[in-house]
Length: 263
Length: 321
Picture 1: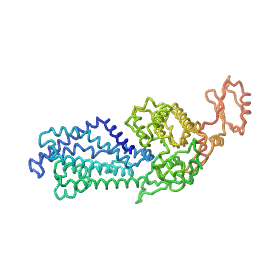
Picture 2: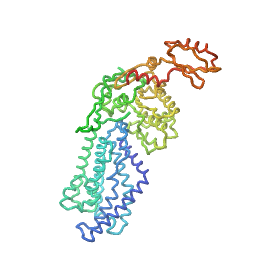
Picture 3: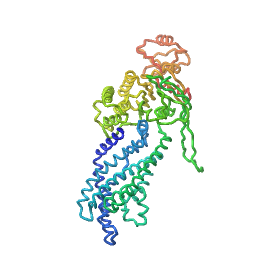
Picture 4: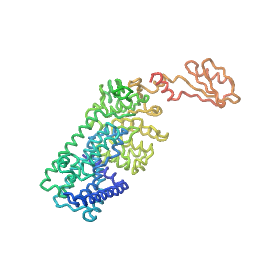
């Protein structure tokens, strides 16, 4: 266990070094947040939607704040696969899947906290309807945090699945851009899932991508009532388990076939 | 029972070729990387493993370090099968791949080492003694707080070696550890490996293209070519077979005289120096010297055996590699 804890701590520390990237990320995400909120204001001026504008802007800001948690790949790990240094990690007395899973988790957690916390502070200070609103209830906030953790588990599992594809293709770009496209669309980053037609939502909210950030945000904002909380959390945990098992299976079958090319 | 026992190890790779015009599917080619290799290594031995590029050296190392599974054949290292129960096996071995890195790029190397400590569950006290021993032997003391990315190639390799030896492996695989290193770093590395082998009885298996490495370190050498073992024995025995010619260079006091050389002995003149290549089995060196002495006053003379790289090249050629 010490090894996994140690790699987690080390990756956290490493992420702290990239402060320039953090500032760049914050500026980029702030820009996206403001543009998106402005867009919804324009939309609401012509035709107001069922969901109040305050909730939409809270949704947008939370999505932007935790964007790094969703779309973040560890370039070191992709390089390892590409140049064969993964052979060192295969020769360690650790479980490769979990060893990398923990690394990814540390990166996503630290990367998004570094960006998310300052961004949320700014978003709280913005005028009503443009910024973030407080959670509707304490239980909403708490369950939102639990859901965020479960979402993180799903995100890391998805990342490891992408990596499993990289092990086969040796180049992360193709599969990554395809999966990222699915992710930003179906997770509500591009357009809040709450604004999709109701009939679509019934399906979309069941998919794994909705478990990442959409579920925690809806618990936070009270879109999901407290009574729904157990079902939502169970659904997330279920998807986390499924995605992790799928990833482990893919890694295991890759490991048997893996050839480290070159001398 | 020997420490390493390998018998009939086979490994094939499937290589997909580029699709030919007019064909629907790409053709596959089966490449036999290892065609049934057998050898044994005793505990504490320092074995050199040589062969041209693509001979199967690295494949052997990868199989014996538990990364690849062979098609067939047996291998036992210290009574364990490398590709079975991998997690338990790899605790006992260390690997250095000369062209890859195990340390973290952006963090000080000491942090990478302390992660390795946790990975191999090295007790704190043992870690401290081992680390100070290794850093002293490898002269890493001043580099511990430097991120890997700032180190030179030689420093990096020393750090990599330190990382691979922290857990006191019984067996160390080195895959081209001196690749790209300057003369000083190479010499230091060789001294270190000798020290580690002697001091701790670590069994070392070394693949390299640098024959000086082999000459300096290994009493025993195995030659691999086309996935087969071609030679296994002492380096000198290997060289003797191919080390058949000598080159003598002479400089005379006065202008270069004409030499009365027997047929088939070639002489080249360059910058007033004569270079003669001959084989002592046909023309004994004593006879050669008297020919040279009779021709005039010798000012300088050197006698050289063939460069070890040339010998190996000749050997690969003869073995049709």
